[in-house]
Amino acid sequence: MSNMSPVQDNSRPSDDHQSAAHGMSSAALARRRLLLRGTTASATALAALTPIGALATSQSTVYTCIGTSGKEGLCTLSGVQSAAHSFGPDTERVPAGGKSPGWWGQSNKTGEPKRPWPVDWREKVSTVLTMAPSNLRSLTLFELMSKSTYASTSERHWLCAYLNAKAGEQGALLPYGFPYTSSEVLGFYLTGNQNAYSFFTTYLENL
Image (cartoon, rainbow, N blue to C red; front, top):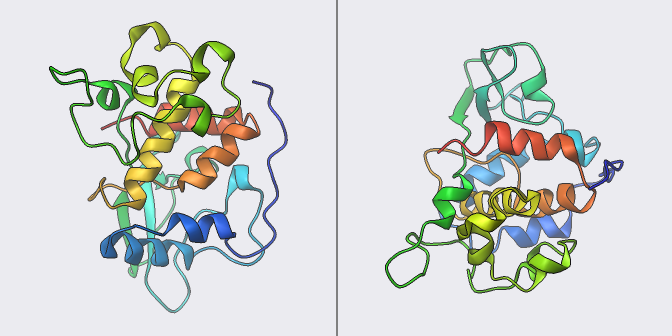
């Protein structure tokens, strides 16, 4: 994939962000509302969303991980590249995390996913990863994740990030959190954002 410029987001959370909330658990919705309070109407480019930080007068939630500094910091594309952050007393810190491709790809004795998926594992790859090469498009999502033949493909890791985001939206990763929505993950994928790809594979395939 080429490294293209990210899509600008100069408005409030889009309809995609709103539709992503449908079907979320009450706990996940509450956490998502806290996270969205940290974003503003002048949000920066999608590829470097403003780290979700504490508001001046109210509590907020941030996702944290060990960044390049070797210390706890904001678990966002830009946050992991920064020096260690200080968090105010009203900031709730939630560890960020996501399952690995191998975790999602484990099968039971009947050849189905060993664990529940946040989407229909029988869907075709082309329905989610619309830019996938022709040899992957007709596979099911689970075939892409479970067959070692495709272990080195970037689509496998993009799908992993998408599944982690979906699981996070449904509250299935608690007490961990995933710092981006499934719509945002697909936005990174469609723009060929290699910084996002590196971020997901380095920091968020850790559970």
